[in-house]
Length: 174
Image (cartoon, rainbow, N blue to C red; front, side):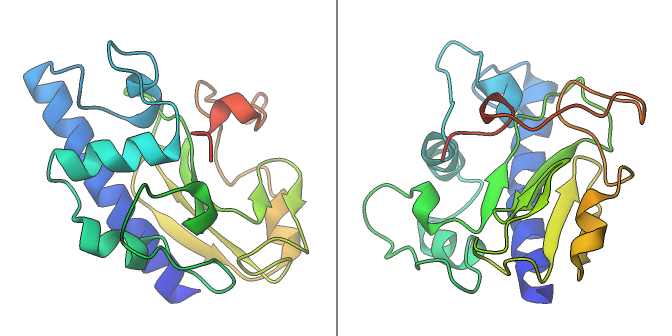
C-alpha cells in the first residue's frame, strides 16, 4: 500500500502543477478536475483528464500505467485511451475554491461515508489510501478507519457537520 500512496502522490503532483499553472495564467484549459469539468472544453471523465495531463506535458504516457497501478487492477498496456478499468484510484472533482481537507483521490475500494467494499480492488476491506487537496497522502490499514468523519470532505463541502456525500457527480467518471 505504501507504493500505492507513492503513485497517488505522483498523480496529485501533476494535478497540482497543472492547477497552479492554470491559476497563475488564468488559463481555463488548466486547473483542478472540478474546474475543468465546467470549462469551455469540459473534462468529465478520468480518461479525458489523463489525456489533458499528457497533452500538456504534466505526465508522460509511458508513466501512466505505473502511476495508476495497484494489486488487482488490470495493467494499462500503454496504448489507446487510458480508462477507469486500469485505475486504482478515483479522482474527485476538486475545485480551486475547495479547502485543503477536500479529498482529491481515493483508492477505488473506498467510498466516502460508506466505507470499504470487501470485493473491490485494490485491497478490498484490508485498507485504502486517500490524498487531500492540501497534499497529505495517507494509507489506512483497517476498515474502521474508512468510517472516520475526520478523513476530509467532499468537493464543495468544508465542515465536519456537513462533510458532503460521495455521488457519481463528485468524481470523474470512470
